[in-house]
Length: 525
Image 1 (tube, rainbow, N blue to C red):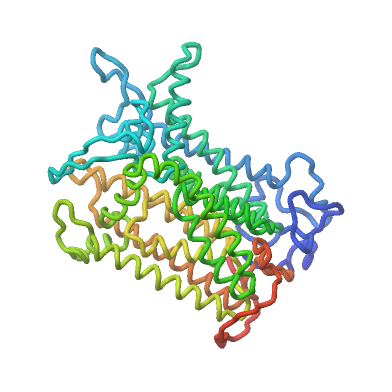
Image 2 (tube, rainbow, N blue to C red):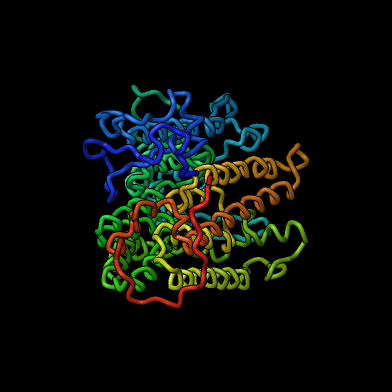
C-alpha cells in the first residue's frame, strides 16, 4: 500500500473527524482511509462512488459505522460459506423403504467440495445417540484390524459445544410445528449459527484492536478462507477467544485476557501459544507482573473447564491427547509433502499396530522450540520492541509449519493475527486465496484417481505453495520488526495498538541490536 497521495485531492492529508470517531481509540484520532492510499481499494471503491473527497466529514455517520459495515460484510461471506457446505446436507429417499437420508452418493462430499467434519462427526462421536461426550465410549476397528476404545476426540469446550448443539437440534426435532429435516441437518445448521456468531465476534474484536486502521479488519470479514473453512470444523470458536483475549490485553485487562486465552485453549490449544510472545515482550519491557497475572488467569480458566471432566471421565478427557500423540504426519504437513515427492518412510519408518511415531513427535517439538527461540532472539535484539500481533503471527505460523498436523481449517487461526501484524491488503488477500485454493486439489485427491480425482502430488504441490506464501509473510514481518519505519501500523507515532501495558513502555531488558540500515518507507502493497 503506497502512502503517496500527491496526485489526489487533499494530498498529504488524512481527513479527520470534527467529532470523536466511532470505535476509534487511536492516539492521533485519525482514521486510515484505504481508498485514499491503496490503489486496489481505490479501484474497488469506484463501484460505490469512489474514495472520500478532501472535504468529507469522517465519523459522522450514525448508523453505517465502519464496524457495522464490517459485520455486514462478514455476514455476507458467512452466507457464502453456508452455501459452500450446503451440498453435503442434501436429502434423498435412499434409506429403508424410501426413508430420507443424506445424499452423499457419488462421493458428493468431494465432488461438490462441500465436506465438513460436522456432518460425519454427528454419528462418529455418537452424538446421534444423545451421548454425553467423554463419558460415552465405543470400539473402533482400524484398517490394520486392531480394536481401539474411542471417546470424544476434541478438547473440552469443543466437545461440549457439539453436545449443546445436539441438544438444541433434538429439541427442534421434537417440536412438530417447526420446519423439519434430518436430525443431522438440523444439527449442522445449529452448529453453523454458533460458529457464525463466533466469527462475527472475531471480526468485532479484530476491528477494535486495529484502532485507526479499522478497515484492515475487512480482510477478516471477507476472507476467502471464511467461505471454504468457516464451517469445516469448530475453529471459529477458538479464534473468537483468541481475538478477544488480544483485545482485552490491549485494553490493559490482564486477568480478562488470561481467562479468554484459557477458554480458547480449552477449545483448541493454539490460543495458549500467545502466552509465549507476551512473556518475551513483558520481559523486555519489565512487565513480568502483568504477564504472571495473565498466565495465572489462563491456567485457572483452563483448569476450571478441564478439571471436572478429567476427574469424572479421565479416559474420555485424555482421548484428545492420546490421539494427537498417536497419529502420524497429516496430509498437509511438510513431512508428508517430503514423503509424497521422495517416497521417504518418515522418521519412524514403518509403524506397526499400536506403535506411536515417537521420533516424529520429538522432531516436531524440537523444531517448534527452535522457532520459538529464534523469535525470542529477534524480539530481544530488534531496535524497537515488536508488536504483540507480529510475534503472535510468527509463533502460530511457526507452529503450523513445523507441526505434524495442519488441518485445513487451522489456517483460520492466522487470519486475525496476519491482519493485525502485516496489514498489506493485496499480499494478505493473495495468501488467503492461495490457502483457500488448496481445498480443491485436496478434495479431488481424496476422491481418488480411479474416480477421476487428481494425483497426490497435485495436492502436495499446492501445500508447498501455501507454505511458501506463509513463510514469505513471516519474512516480511521479521523485516518490519527490524525496520519499524516500514511498519504501516506504526505510522504517526503509534507504538502497539494491542500492546496494553507494553504500549509506549520503555525497555528494561534488551539484547544487542543487530546492525541495520535505515531506509525511507518504500511503496508497498
